Image (tube, rainbow, N blue to C red; front, side):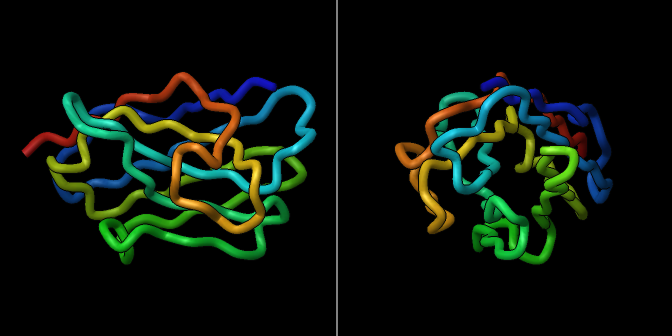
Length: 123
């Protein structure tokens, strides 16, 4: 399976971006999708997860109210809508395929990862 992220870029403080994650290939053993981010020198941080059918989701407290996750089952694509962006949101954003339906936050619960897309928020 291959996960391909897109939609990153440079945006000013207060701006918006929508990231996309297209899944290509077989999806055996995948029950959810998640978004994480990793800034230089920091650990990978959970942001959001959505069920395989797109009906339930979870958002990390750190971005709640600004980020939302959704999934288009027909297109096999998962989205992360990011509003009111801040310089502290600057990081590489990665999507991942989850092996659990419980919308886990731990990286060990995800078994396929994309290469990531850079998001840079200028002040």
